[in-house]
Image (cartoon, rainbow, N blue to C red; front, top):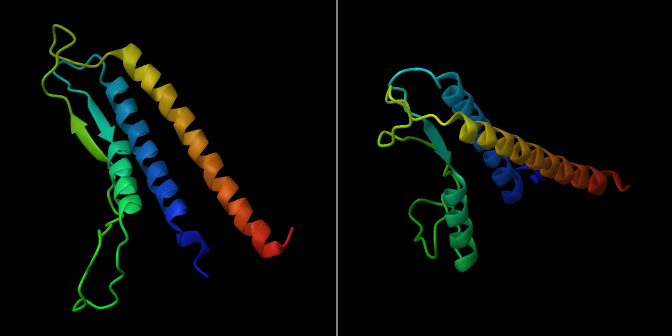
Length: 136
């Protein structure tokens, strides 16, 4: 009975963590829009998740129950998380700051919509589990 440890819920949980981290990074960028020399950061996560999904659908992987067992197929780590990257190359202002407030505000709104969608998906999954247990 491991309902809450399914691969879908784990992916949704990691996506929520990435969206939360992205929210913090974007608000940090916005807070430093006038700081001289500040370099904006971004969060990369979706491409790592897509790579993991492509690997998991392309081949069958064997499950190892002991470290001395041979492994076969693709091994899926399932732990790839979000990565923060700082853009040190571009410059937007004379003070060597590279934060574009309009772009950051639009990314903030997009990330908020993405976060709300992920919360609705998790709520739907949990409601489905509750319905299957309760029989309603």
